[in-house]
Image (cartoon, rainbow over all chains, first blue to last red):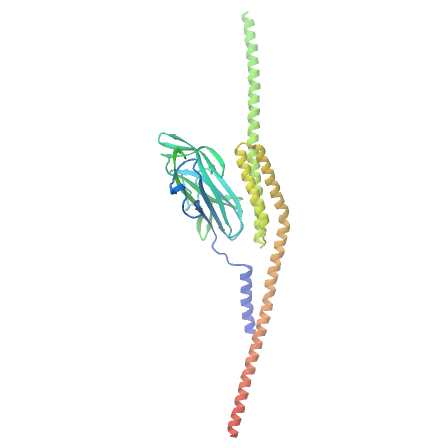
Length: 199
Length: 177
């Protein structure tokens, strides 16, 4: 009888410990971009990545929090060409290009955040075989300046980097360590721009 | 005449020097005001961002203690949107609109900060109650399961005894026959 009571005590204590300290599942963030119909397709009008000035592009950026806690996340949107440095997953280094636009939000565990991302090229300046984007509109916010240039207007890309608040450094960070590996989340999407206006 | 004209020249050059000094002072004053204004813009924004981090830390503590404050998270998200919109307005040159949004964000963050201590206490109370319930359930589970085991054992023994008794009666009957 005593042996039975001892075994039951051990089993009940183990179960109580598991209830009070549930084991952590794998911690990760996920980011994705969806096209105009909310699926991973039709990213450009008529599926043609050669965009004209003023042509509106409708995307949805999705962020999923599976870190097991409340998270403060920021999506940094960067406009690059093919030669500007991309973020590096191995070292957890973000692209050195300054962000063009930011979205910030606090996400509870297991929450998915969908960000409508509607953009259009407002103006370009062609010169000696290169096309310089001088104006772009993101979610009805016009941004101007010498944004980025590319040969013949080909191979521009939007890079979306996921940053999050780190309590230890009291700042936003781009990467984290889990299971002895450096992790970071970013994605990109390519397009070309012709210097003619849309009809 | 030469002396006179030289004196006039000296007076004119002194006036020019004085005027240029004033001009320089005015330019310096304008530049310093501009730099202060720019500094204030960046400080205001970084102040708001720092406040949002602080509020987030406190909310994260509430969630870590097992509490839920989805209304406060929604309010913090509203403040973040206001900070972002203020930044956009300021970049577009609408300083008044930006300042108004920044004030709104500041008051939203202050509202959250006011509500957090009560939520933290509530979350801690909930967490303590949960721990106590789980801990108290251990002896209850042990006592109940031991009692059930004891009762089952006793029933089994009684059943065995009854079976043996029945066998003895049958044995006796067969010997009598």
